[in-house]
Length: 243
Ligand SMILES: [Zn+2]
Image (cartoon, rainbow, N blue to C red):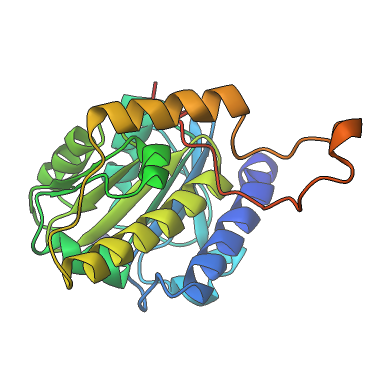
């Protein structure tokens, strides 16, 4: 029992921390949603029925990539197969699924969230809406995994949103970015037809981000010391995972 009780102890804490962060940001409603992080063939994942916004590490279960419980006392989320499927298909490191209000609202009307803001390139560009299927079913897992092709995010029709990334922090950032982008689209659409960045504009953003190492802090050059104030920029506009 020594091995099983200590399995992914740190990761279980980080999953609980991530859930509380998502809750504080307003992305979680009650027991809806689930979060996981993978280390090798083991996955720390939220338990079914747990209130995520107040989650504790004891409410995180550890399974292997076949779904066998390795540690913990609670049944894993009913979307376990969805999480495991994303790991198997994309070899990613963390998965966040929420019923965030803006993402869920748009999932009821859109087939795709278009690339209306360059920050969406962090998620791979436009975000597909996976066709509806009942929660917890292999059909839903298949639908969402397909919609994630080349992307770090998908909306799930009449259900919610899912993001994934190399690290849990990144997956949470992706979830926050997606919810923000859904809000931008929603507000823009209230005033007219939102303009969409075309392929050329998207490529130019990626080239500029690569050229300027966008989204990372850099030390000042001596010539910059009396220069203009520095502005904190958001994340790099290039997708680094799901390759
Ligand atoms: Zn759900």
